[in-house]
Length: 201
Image 1: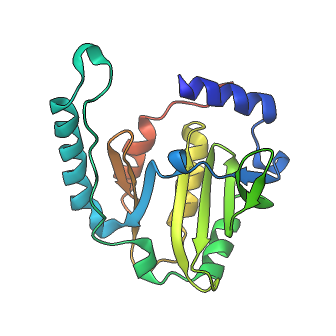
Image 2: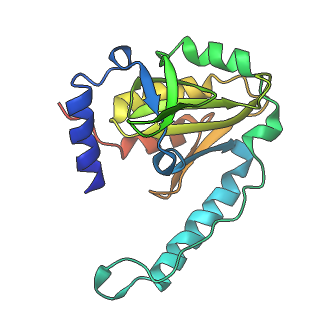
């Protein structure tokens, strides 16, 4: 399983798994894009999409449980983070008050790392927020989240995400698990966190 591989890689590279001991955050788009940060007004759309994905998956399951015979193409969200004109510097400051910042954000490969114009924060490399600016460093263009290191770290990340100075409440939609939570709804956040496992000892 990929999760087991990532945990072994994490344990080999970062034995205590704390951001303070890791200077760079590596951008893995496939993992970061699993969780989408959206305006909370998109909750009904997310609910509809999660139901549509489940129905599509059931209709296209390959014989013997060997995967699927087709791929669902999710339409664009009705509203995005970029449209909210969230100020970049205050966002970085708000998140930085609650989470440790990584020294750099990189992509590419270990042999040829490439810097990314973004800021990343988190309690570990597997639970983090990446904030991308609009090219002028005035506005937030995109926010990516990964929550793969247990309930406690996920709770810290969601609390920091809720502190973003957005003009409207934000939410997360996890397309991999079919769950979402509006960050201004404590019951939804609690329900989201409740299904996460504890971090391995």
